[in-house]
Length: 116
Image (cartoon, rainbow, N blue to C red; front, side, top):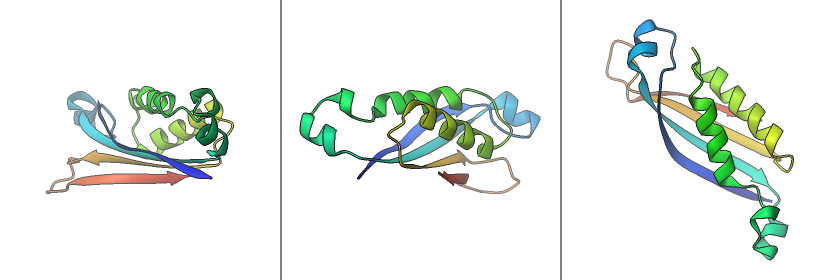
């Protein structure tokens, strides 16, 4: 088994429960860890044998552009899409952080981490 990590993906999107968040938008950081068997691609050096992390990034990007009220909803949608596209995926963890959320004080970020 091996882990594929895509860390620090940055997106500007319009997620949030409050109207201002949906109008002004915010910056989000996403980290993704995917567990899969890397034996074959490590020997073949062929992307066709691997879990294509460029494709995984595009899945995350696509889901981040669909508006949601909750980070939990985005995380579930990303997981659903990843498992639908990658049958070789054994386990995945995603962390989605909203930077400087409008909560009435100085807060660097709030985040949701989801594992399946």
